[in-house]
Image (cartoon, rainbow, N blue to C red; front, side, top):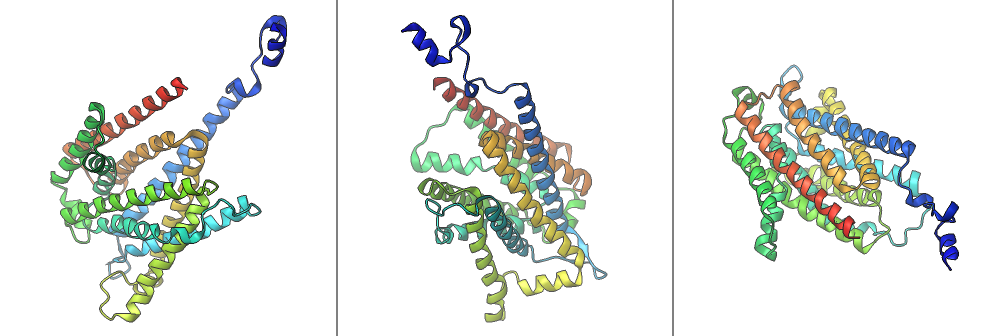
Length: 362
Protein backbone atom coordinates (compact mmCIF):
# COMPACT_ATOMS: atom_id res chain seq x y z
CA UNK A 1 0.00 0.00 0.00
CA UNK A 2 2.86 2.37 0.88
CA UNK A 3 4.59 1.71 -2.41
CA UNK A 4 1.33 2.20 -4.24
CA UNK A 5 0.82 5.59 -2.59
CA UNK A 6 4.35 6.56 -3.47
CA UNK A 7 3.67 5.57 -7.05
CA UNK A 8 0.63 7.78 -7.27
CA UNK A 9 2.61 10.64 -5.71
CA UNK A 10 5.16 10.70 -8.48
CA UNK A 11 7.30 7.53 -8.19
CA UNK A 12 10.45 9.08 -6.73
CA UNK A 13 13.74 7.25 -6.19
CA UNK A 14 14.25 5.65 -2.73
CA UNK A 15 10.79 6.72 -1.62
CA UNK A 16 11.40 10.44 -2.34
CA UNK A 17 8.37 11.85 -4.11
CA UNK A 18 9.21 14.10 -7.04
CA UNK A 19 6.93 17.11 -7.47
CA UNK A 20 4.78 17.17 -10.54
CA UNK A 21 5.71 19.84 -13.07
CA UNK A 22 2.73 22.01 -12.18
CA UNK A 23 3.69 21.95 -8.46
CA UNK A 24 7.32 22.93 -8.86
CA UNK A 25 6.72 26.67 -9.14
CA UNK A 26 8.75 28.84 -11.45
CA UNK A 27 12.21 27.75 -12.27
CA UNK A 28 15.04 30.17 -13.02
CA UNK A 29 14.15 30.55 -16.67
CA UNK A 30 10.41 30.99 -16.11
CA UNK A 31 11.01 33.45 -13.25
CA UNK A 32 13.26 35.51 -15.51
CA UNK A 33 10.53 35.36 -18.13
CA UNK A 34 7.91 36.58 -15.64
CA UNK A 35 10.16 39.44 -14.55
CA UNK A 36 10.69 40.39 -18.20
CA UNK A 37 6.91 40.33 -18.88
CA UNK A 38 6.25 42.40 -15.74
CA UNK A 39 8.89 44.95 -16.77
CA UNK A 40 7.31 45.04 -20.23
CA UNK A 41 3.88 45.71 -18.68
CA UNK A 42 5.21 48.45 -16.41
CA UNK A 43 7.01 50.14 -19.29
CA UNK A 44 3.90 49.86 -21.49
CA UNK A 45 1.46 51.25 -18.90
CA UNK A 46 3.78 54.04 -17.78
CA UNK A 47 4.76 55.18 -21.26
CA UNK A 48 1.23 55.01 -22.69
CA UNK A 49 -0.58 56.81 -19.89
CA UNK A 50 2.12 59.31 -18.96
CA UNK A 51 2.35 60.40 -22.59
CA UNK A 52 -1.46 60.49 -22.77
CA UNK A 53 -1.46 62.76 -19.74
CA UNK A 54 1.05 65.10 -21.39
CA UNK A 55 -1.13 65.24 -24.53
CA UNK A 56 -4.28 65.81 -22.46
CA UNK A 57 -2.67 68.70 -20.64
CA UNK A 58 -1.30 70.14 -23.89
CA UNK A 59 -4.74 70.07 -25.52
CA UNK A 60 -6.33 71.76 -22.51
CA UNK A 61 -3.78 74.54 -21.98
CA UNK A 62 -1.90 75.23 -25.22
CA UNK A 63 -2.88 77.89 -27.75
CA UNK A 64 -2.81 76.86 -31.41
CA UNK A 65 -2.45 78.61 -34.75
CA UNK A 66 -1.52 82.20 -35.64
CA UNK A 67 -4.54 83.48 -33.68
CA UNK A 68 -3.42 81.64 -30.50
CA UNK A 69 -6.79 79.95 -30.04
CA UNK A 70 -7.56 77.33 -27.40
CA UNK A 71 -9.08 73.97 -28.23
CA UNK A 72 -12.32 74.51 -26.31
CA UNK A 73 -14.03 71.25 -27.25
CA UNK A 74 -12.34 68.90 -24.77
CA UNK A 75 -15.41 66.63 -24.69
CA UNK A 76 -14.50 65.73 -28.28
CA UNK A 77 -11.58 63.74 -26.83
CA UNK A 78 -14.05 61.33 -25.27
CA UNK A 79 -15.84 60.80 -28.59
CA UNK A 80 -12.54 60.25 -30.43
CA UNK A 81 -11.41 57.81 -27.73
CA UNK A 82 -14.66 55.86 -28.11
CA UNK A 83 -14.17 55.54 -31.87
CA UNK A 84 -10.52 54.45 -31.69
CA UNK A 85 -11.10 51.99 -28.81
CA UNK A 86 -14.14 50.51 -30.59
CA UNK A 87 -12.10 49.86 -33.74
CA UNK A 88 -9.18 48.57 -31.67
CA UNK A 89 -11.31 46.10 -29.66
CA UNK A 90 -13.06 44.90 -32.83
CA UNK A 91 -9.68 44.12 -34.41
CA UNK A 92 -8.44 42.35 -31.26
CA UNK A 93 -11.58 40.20 -31.05
CA UNK A 94 -11.20 39.18 -34.70
CA UNK A 95 -7.52 38.38 -34.18
CA UNK A 96 -7.78 36.42 -30.92
CA UNK A 97 -11.30 35.02 -30.73
CA UNK A 98 -12.69 35.24 -34.27
CA UNK A 99 -13.76 31.62 -34.38
CA UNK A 100 -15.05 31.26 -30.84
CA UNK A 101 -18.73 30.92 -30.05
CA UNK A 102 -20.71 33.86 -28.67
CA UNK A 103 -22.48 31.56 -26.19
CA UNK A 104 -21.91 32.70 -22.61
CA UNK A 105 -20.78 36.16 -23.70
CA UNK A 106 -22.84 39.27 -22.95
CA UNK A 107 -24.82 40.60 -25.95
CA UNK A 108 -24.00 44.14 -27.09
CA UNK A 109 -27.35 45.55 -25.96
CA UNK A 110 -26.44 44.77 -22.36
CA UNK A 111 -23.98 47.66 -22.39
CA UNK A 112 -26.33 50.45 -23.50
CA UNK A 113 -27.30 51.52 -19.95
CA UNK A 114 -23.91 51.53 -18.28
CA UNK A 115 -22.42 53.26 -21.33
CA UNK A 116 -24.37 56.37 -20.32
CA UNK A 117 -22.33 56.75 -17.12
CA UNK A 118 -19.20 55.67 -18.97
CA UNK A 119 -19.82 58.54 -21.40
CA UNK A 120 -20.65 61.20 -18.81
CA UNK A 121 -17.93 60.30 -16.27
CA UNK A 122 -14.79 60.60 -18.44
CA UNK A 123 -16.21 63.73 -20.10
CA UNK A 124 -16.47 65.40 -16.69
CA UNK A 125 -12.89 64.41 -15.89
CA UNK A 126 -11.62 65.92 -19.14
CA UNK A 127 -13.74 69.06 -18.79
CA UNK A 128 -12.27 69.60 -15.30
CA UNK A 129 -8.96 70.53 -16.95
CA UNK A 130 -10.51 73.84 -17.99
CA UNK A 131 -10.79 74.80 -14.32
CA UNK A 132 -7.95 73.05 -12.41
CA UNK A 133 -4.41 71.96 -13.26
CA UNK A 134 -3.51 68.47 -14.43
CA UNK A 135 -1.72 67.53 -11.15
CA UNK A 136 -4.83 68.65 -9.21
CA UNK A 137 -7.03 66.50 -11.48
CA UNK A 138 -4.79 63.44 -11.00
CA UNK A 139 -4.83 63.84 -7.21
CA UNK A 140 -8.60 64.32 -7.09
CA UNK A 141 -9.19 61.23 -9.23
CA UNK A 142 -6.80 59.24 -6.99
CA UNK A 143 -9.25 59.60 -4.07
CA UNK A 144 -11.67 56.94 -5.37
CA UNK A 145 -11.46 55.12 -2.05
CA UNK A 146 -13.16 58.01 -0.19
CA UNK A 147 -16.66 57.78 -1.78
CA UNK A 148 -16.42 53.98 -1.67
CA UNK A 149 -15.81 53.97 2.09
CA UNK A 150 -18.42 56.68 2.71
CA UNK A 151 -21.11 54.76 0.82
CA UNK A 152 -20.07 51.51 2.50
CA UNK A 153 -20.36 53.05 5.97
CA UNK A 154 -23.52 55.11 5.47
CA UNK A 155 -25.54 52.80 3.24
CA UNK A 156 -24.39 49.31 4.24
CA UNK A 157 -22.96 49.72 7.75
CA UNK A 158 -19.54 48.37 6.74
CA UNK A 159 -16.90 48.68 9.47
CA UNK A 160 -13.35 49.46 8.44
CA UNK A 161 -10.08 48.97 10.30
CA UNK A 162 -7.90 51.75 11.71
CA UNK A 163 -5.27 51.40 8.92
CA UNK A 164 -8.04 51.76 6.32
CA UNK A 165 -9.26 54.95 8.00
CA UNK A 166 -5.64 56.16 8.11
CA UNK A 167 -5.36 55.66 4.35
CA UNK A 168 -8.54 57.65 3.82
CA UNK A 169 -7.32 60.43 6.12
CA UNK A 170 -4.01 60.73 4.26
CA UNK A 171 -5.67 60.78 0.83
CA UNK A 172 -8.46 63.17 1.85
CA UNK A 173 -6.03 65.41 3.73
CA UNK A 174 -3.59 65.49 0.84
CA UNK A 175 -6.23 66.34 -1.75
CA UNK A 176 -7.84 68.96 0.51
CA UNK A 177 -4.57 70.69 1.39
CA UNK A 178 -3.49 70.68 -2.27
CA UNK A 179 -6.80 72.29 -3.23
CA UNK A 180 -6.53 74.95 -0.51
CA UNK A 181 -2.90 75.87 -1.17
CA UNK A 182 -2.27 78.73 -3.56
CA UNK A 183 -1.57 77.63 -7.14
CA UNK A 184 1.24 79.40 -9.00
CA UNK A 185 0.21 82.28 -11.26
CA UNK A 186 2.01 80.59 -14.15
CA UNK A 187 -0.27 77.56 -13.85
CA UNK A 188 -3.43 79.64 -13.46
CA UNK A 189 -2.68 81.63 -16.61
CA UNK A 190 -2.65 78.39 -18.62
CA UNK A 191 -6.16 77.39 -17.56
CA UNK A 192 -9.10 78.30 -19.79
CA UNK A 193 -11.45 79.28 -16.92
CA UNK A 194 -9.81 78.91 -13.48
CA UNK A 195 -12.47 77.71 -11.04
CA UNK A 196 -11.17 75.25 -8.43
CA UNK A 197 -14.52 74.37 -6.77
CA UNK A 198 -16.11 73.54 -10.13
CA UNK A 199 -13.05 71.58 -11.29
CA UNK A 200 -12.89 69.42 -8.16
CA UNK A 201 -16.66 68.89 -8.23
CA UNK A 202 -16.40 67.57 -11.80
CA UNK A 203 -13.58 65.21 -10.74
CA UNK A 204 -15.56 63.77 -7.82
CA UNK A 205 -18.66 63.34 -10.01
CA UNK A 206 -16.36 61.54 -12.44
CA UNK A 207 -15.35 59.18 -9.61
CA UNK A 208 -18.99 58.52 -8.70
CA UNK A 209 -19.93 57.64 -12.28
CA UNK A 210 -16.79 55.50 -12.66
CA UNK A 211 -17.70 53.58 -9.50
CA UNK A 212 -21.12 52.73 -10.89
CA UNK A 213 -19.62 51.85 -14.29
CA UNK A 214 -17.02 49.50 -12.80
CA UNK A 215 -19.49 47.71 -10.52
CA UNK A 216 -21.94 47.22 -13.41
CA UNK A 217 -19.17 45.86 -15.63
CA UNK A 218 -18.31 43.35 -12.87
CA UNK A 219 -21.99 42.36 -12.69
CA UNK A 220 -22.13 41.77 -16.46
CA UNK A 221 -18.94 39.70 -16.26
CA UNK A 222 -20.36 37.56 -13.44
CA UNK A 223 -23.63 36.91 -15.29
CA UNK A 224 -21.85 36.15 -18.56
CA UNK A 225 -18.63 34.39 -17.47
CA UNK A 226 -17.26 33.88 -20.99
CA UNK A 227 -17.21 37.62 -21.61
CA UNK A 228 -13.62 38.79 -22.05
CA UNK A 229 -12.17 42.32 -21.62
CA UNK A 230 -12.30 42.95 -25.38
CA UNK A 231 -16.05 42.18 -25.44
CA UNK A 232 -16.62 44.73 -22.67
CA UNK A 233 -14.40 47.27 -24.42
CA UNK A 234 -16.27 46.75 -27.70
CA UNK A 235 -19.75 47.06 -26.16
CA UNK A 236 -18.94 50.10 -24.02
CA UNK A 237 -17.26 52.01 -26.82
CA UNK A 238 -19.93 51.11 -29.40
CA UNK A 239 -22.66 52.74 -27.33
CA UNK A 240 -20.33 55.53 -26.24
CA UNK A 241 -19.67 56.35 -29.89
CA UNK A 242 -23.41 56.41 -30.64
CA UNK A 243 -24.24 58.61 -27.63
CA UNK A 244 -21.44 61.09 -28.28
CA UNK A 245 -22.24 61.24 -32.00
CA UNK A 246 -25.85 62.16 -31.19
CA UNK A 247 -24.83 64.73 -28.57
CA UNK A 248 -22.04 66.35 -30.59
CA UNK A 249 -23.25 66.07 -34.19
CA UNK A 250 -27.04 65.57 -34.23
CA UNK A 251 -28.16 67.82 -31.36
CA UNK A 252 -26.38 70.97 -32.71
CA UNK A 253 -28.39 70.58 -35.94
CA UNK A 254 -31.67 70.41 -34.01
CA UNK A 255 -30.99 73.17 -31.47
CA UNK A 256 -29.48 76.48 -32.58
CA UNK A 257 -28.28 77.38 -29.06
CA UNK A 258 -26.89 73.98 -28.15
CA UNK A 259 -24.82 74.60 -24.98
CA UNK A 260 -22.74 71.41 -25.10
CA UNK A 261 -19.59 70.69 -27.13
CA UNK A 262 -20.11 70.98 -30.89
CA UNK A 263 -18.52 68.21 -32.93
CA UNK A 264 -18.59 70.20 -36.16
CA UNK A 265 -16.64 73.05 -34.56
CA UNK A 266 -14.12 70.57 -33.13
CA UNK A 267 -13.56 68.98 -36.55
CA UNK A 268 -13.20 72.44 -38.12
CA UNK A 269 -10.62 73.39 -35.50
CA UNK A 270 -8.66 70.21 -36.27
CA UNK A 271 -8.77 70.99 -40.01
CA UNK A 272 -7.41 74.48 -39.37
CA UNK A 273 -4.79 73.16 -36.93
CA UNK A 274 -3.56 69.69 -38.01
CA UNK A 275 -1.28 69.59 -34.97
CA UNK A 276 -4.40 69.25 -32.78
CA UNK A 277 -5.73 66.38 -34.89
CA UNK A 278 -2.47 64.47 -34.49
CA UNK A 279 -2.39 65.10 -30.73
CA UNK A 280 -5.96 63.79 -30.43
CA UNK A 281 -5.10 60.69 -32.48
CA UNK A 282 -2.02 59.95 -30.34
CA UNK A 283 -4.09 60.59 -27.18
CA UNK A 284 -6.63 57.97 -28.26
CA UNK A 285 -3.95 55.52 -29.40
CA UNK A 286 -2.23 55.78 -26.01
CA UNK A 287 -5.52 54.89 -24.31
CA UNK A 288 -6.07 51.84 -26.51
CA UNK A 289 -2.47 50.60 -26.17
CA UNK A 290 -2.51 51.25 -22.42
CA UNK A 291 -5.60 49.06 -22.04
CA UNK A 292 -3.72 46.26 -23.80
CA UNK A 293 -1.01 46.35 -21.16
CA UNK A 294 -3.55 46.58 -18.33
CA UNK A 295 -5.36 43.47 -19.60
CA UNK A 296 -2.03 41.66 -19.94
CA UNK A 297 -0.98 42.66 -16.41
CA UNK A 298 -4.26 41.54 -14.82
CA UNK A 299 -4.27 38.22 -16.70
CA UNK A 300 -0.63 37.39 -15.80
CA UNK A 301 -0.13 39.00 -12.37
CA UNK A 302 -3.55 39.94 -10.97
CA UNK A 303 -5.42 43.15 -10.27
CA UNK A 304 -3.31 44.03 -7.20
CA UNK A 305 -0.15 44.28 -9.29
CA UNK A 306 -2.03 46.33 -11.84
CA UNK A 307 -3.24 48.70 -9.09
CA UNK A 308 0.34 49.16 -7.89
CA UNK A 309 1.61 49.96 -11.39
CA UNK A 310 -1.18 52.40 -12.20
CA UNK A 311 -0.83 54.17 -8.81
CA UNK A 312 2.90 54.74 -9.29
CA UNK A 313 2.14 55.88 -12.83
CA UNK A 314 -0.14 58.62 -11.48
CA UNK A 315 2.67 59.88 -9.26
CA UNK A 316 5.08 59.91 -12.19
CA UNK A 317 2.50 61.77 -14.28
CA UNK A 318 2.50 64.59 -11.72
CA UNK A 319 6.30 64.68 -11.73
CA UNK A 320 6.44 64.75 -15.54
CA UNK A 321 3.75 67.45 -15.67
CA UNK A 322 5.68 69.59 -13.20
CA UNK A 323 9.01 69.19 -14.96
CA UNK A 324 8.10 69.12 -18.66
CA UNK A 325 4.79 70.93 -18.95
CA UNK A 326 5.69 73.86 -16.71
CA UNK A 327 3.28 73.32 -13.82
CA UNK A 328 5.50 74.29 -10.89
CA UNK A 329 4.40 72.95 -7.50
CA UNK A 330 5.34 74.56 -4.21
CA UNK A 331 7.08 72.50 -1.47
CA UNK A 332 3.78 72.42 0.48
CA UNK A 333 1.95 71.10 -2.60
CA UNK A 334 4.57 68.38 -3.00
CA UNK A 335 3.90 67.52 0.65
CA UNK A 336 0.21 67.08 -0.25
CA UNK A 337 1.17 64.83 -3.17
CA UNK A 338 3.32 62.68 -0.84
CA UNK A 339 0.39 62.44 1.63
CA UNK A 340 -1.97 61.15 -1.07
CA UNK A 341 0.40 58.54 -2.44
CA UNK A 342 1.45 57.44 1.06
CA UNK A 343 -2.21 56.67 1.73
CA UNK A 344 -2.55 54.82 -1.56
CA UNK A 345 0.66 52.85 -0.87
CA UNK A 346 -0.63 51.74 2.55
CA UNK A 347 -3.91 50.70 0.91
CA UNK A 348 -2.03 48.57 -1.63
CA UNK A 349 0.01 46.98 1.19
CA UNK A 350 -3.16 46.15 3.14
CA UNK A 351 -4.69 44.50 0.06
CA UNK A 352 -1.49 42.51 -0.49
CA UNK A 353 -1.46 41.41 3.18
CA UNK A 354 -5.13 40.38 3.02
CA UNK A 355 -4.49 38.42 -0.17
CA UNK A 356 -1.53 36.60 1.38
CA UNK A 357 -3.67 35.74 4.42
CA UNK A 358 -6.35 34.15 2.23
CA UNK A 359 -3.75 32.19 0.28
CA UNK A 360 -2.19 30.95 3.52
CA UNK A 361 -5.56 29.71 4.81
CA UNK A 362 -6.20 27.84 1.57
